Length: 129
Length: 158
Image (cartoon, rainbow over all chains, first blue to last red):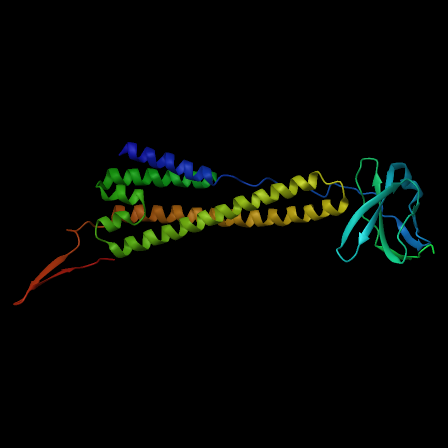
């Protein structure tokens, strides 16, 4: 009988052991401090080009690495990185005319962390002819 | 979990003591699976209730355990993506997902422990019930002899 009880004990520990996987503690808080989002974002269409301008707090330029400029395909809600710049102006040239182009811009800090992107700015690009 | 392990050990010690005190093969069956001892001694109704309740508890426990493991994996994945995010939008998305999965895991963990406690409780009550149940002379069987045949009747005890 004692052998039988031992078998039961071992089985119980195996069953309980299978149930012992517990989830870990939740990380305490949100650990990221993103760079500010560029403001006053404007897109002006030209002849087969588009000029993008925006503002950024002067005191944040020290921790800024670059700005990232994206195409925003609104129909698919997808973005595509088209370039980077350290300035608050970007000229997108060699575009196909008679089309609408939409853009978003974000700031990246020196650690490589990217902040929130701006809202989408669109413009109509004229044909050169 | 430690409480449950200690509880199981106490149940086993009680069952071992009960066996020593009362004796009999019926307790071995009762320890083996709830309801089995009752069925072996002819208490089919009570045995079916114990066995059915234990089966439902164990099945629910298994399902909850699988769901819990899956949720913990999803939580770990979300946490990994959150900690390696390089865009604030991704970080926010995976942080929210991680929180949701952690809440789900908490709930499933609680349900799992309740079901585990229920299964152990049914098992313990079954052993205690078996230890104090009267053996009697087994299930009553009666024989009625008629002019054109005979009838054997077996009584089920609850």
